[in-house]
Every structure is written in structure tokens, then in C-alpha cells.
Length: 441
Image 1 (cartoon, rainbow, N blue to C red):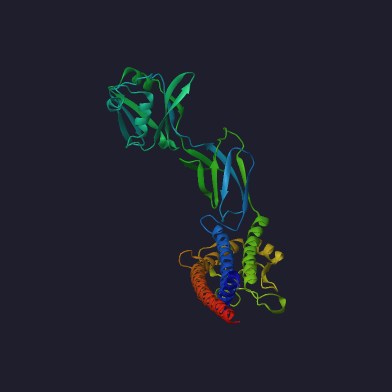
Image 2: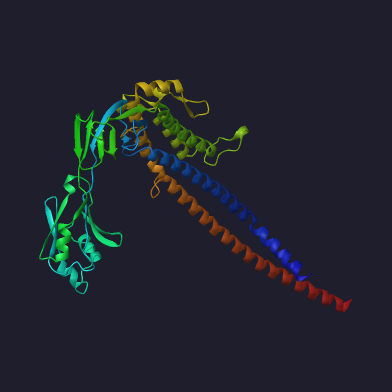
């Protein structure tokens, strides 16, 4: 028999020897990979929903949407909080907050390497030692070196020095780092060079530090004054940033605030859509099977039951801090396919009559979003969550199956070697017998 026929027989015998074990490992691997894919899909769905929940949480986050409109552009802007009420306000901007800024000119290439420059701001003063600055520059104190010495001085808490070039002349520009009347600073020198003394005497005020002043009403109304142009909660829930002052006698600025009901409703609908998306993803992985289709890989697993129970119960709960209202009071309805819908008419009516209850119900501390986050955390935590544990378990099982597959292949190779040796020996014995018979016949 040709050697290749003997090898083929040995291969077939070795294959038959391990085929049952190999088929079993392959089936187990396919099931593991299908489960791994399903778990990853579920994990992604949970992480995506958690991202929606977290995106709706946090300081300043609200379901309620309001809009602010000013009667004139370019003078102010407004930021609205959840408790902003529909109302109109008159604002007269008496003054905007400014930094304090001045320039020193005529200093030339060498400011002078003797004496000191003193800078005083808001009751604190620091000294720039020009001799020390000069020792770092071979006896020369350039304007760049002076600016650098001011900026890096350890006692400098609020003045920034830069260089400005205009028509070939370089000036040192000093600017307060904050706005407001308290940002003003003064300069003096002691034992300084003539050019520095002359520059200080001729310093030019570019901007005088000033507070912002706003009147609620007209220019004789309720006065607000501060060092910043942003008035936080000028009225409850309304922060205003001013950018241009009125002229004396000018008509006040009108600010109209109104609730954007369609945008508020859209936020609620987006939230319900996110819940339905997660439920759809869960359903696709846990289909019961039967006549309607294949059974879902994760059908009947504890995590699937837990997620469905969590969503089904939490969204129906009422909360004392939200006037004992639940989403059911705002039009939430269960559909026949296990999802949720919203009754637009009920939602419209409740957004008009109980807007704060809706906002507290969903985004309030300890309310629905917080409850969902806390309930999802044991599953979605990337270091200790059950989804991670499940993924790790599947990975371990796949590695074990790969080790089994390697062992089966080694067993198959050994079986092939033994069978080949047996077949070759048998073939050789048959050939010897044939030759012996040929000698006598």
C-alpha cells in the first residue's frame, strides 16, 4: 500500500478518536461566544442608558427649559436656572466692571539697574529689586526683564505685565487680573533711574478699575454693585452678565423670561425614549423563543429579570419631594409590548400646573434619576460590577475551552503517530509474508 494511503488511514483513525470531544468543545465555544456577544451588547445598552441618566444630572441641570429675551442686543446676556419664573424685568446698566490698566513708556533699552519699583494693590504692596534684576542681565534691565520680574514675583497676587509695541515704541503695560474697584493699583519708585522716574510720572491710565453697577427698574431703581460683570441670581433663577452700560436718561433694557413648554416636553420624551431603547435591547437578548423566533441568549438570566424589574418599578414610583407625584401623573402609560408612552394632553396640563414637581421628580436629589443611578451601579461599575464579573467569567471559560482544544489536538497528533506506526508495521509484515510465499509458489 502506498505510504500516502497509510498516512490517510492513520489521520482518519486519529480524527475519529477525538471527534466527539472536539465537537463538544466547539459547541461549548460557540455558546460561550454567543453569550459573550450578548453580554457585551447588554453592557453597552446599560452604559448608554447610564450615560443618558448622568447627562441629566448635576448642578444646574433641569428638565424645565426657559428662554430669556432682551429688548436690545449687545448689552447683556442671561443664564436661567430651574427656578426661573415667567416674568419681565427692567434693567438699567449704570456701569460695567473693568480691569485697571496702565502703560509705562520711554523706558528705552535699559530701565536701570538700581533702586526699586513698588506696586501696591488692595492694601498689599510688593517691591521689585532692580539691582537684583540687573545682576541677571549683566547690569542691564530690559523692559522684558522688568515685566518678567513683576510677573514671577512671589508676592504679586493680581498684576500682569506685558509689552506693547506701537509705532516702533515699546511700552510696559500693567493690567489687573480681576475687574472691580479693588483691582486698582499704584506704582512708586525709590532710588530708581531717571528714565523710570519719568516714565512713572508720565504713566498713562488705559482703563480704571471699576465695579459693575446695575439697577433693577430704572436708573434710580434697586441698586446692585459688585466687582464682576456676572450678577448671579440677580433675581431668583436668573443670572445676568452685562457687557455695555447705558447712557444717562436712556431707556432701560427689558428682559422677558418665559417657559419653553415644547422644549421641556421634548426632554421628558427623550428620557422615556432612552428607557424604551434599553427595554428593547433587553427584549432582543431575552426573547422566550418558540414559534415566534429563536430564544434569546440571555433569556431567563437573573440580570435580565433585575433590569426589567428595576425599570418597571422605579418609573412608577411617587416621591414626597415632588408633591407625591409620579411619572404616571404626568402621562406615563404602559404599552402592550412592555414599553412606555406619554399622554401628550396630560403632560401638557401637568407641565403648566406642576412644573417644579416634574423637575424635582426626575432631576431632584434622591429622586428618580438618583434612584436609577444607584440601582444600575451594581451592574455597570467598570471595576466591580456584575457585568464585568460576567464578562470576566466568560473570558475565563473561553480560555479553558482553548486549553481543552489544544489538549485534544495534542491527543489527536499522538493518536496519529501511534496509528501510523501500527499501520506501517502491519504493512511491512504483510510485505514480508508476500515475499516468503513467493519463494515457494
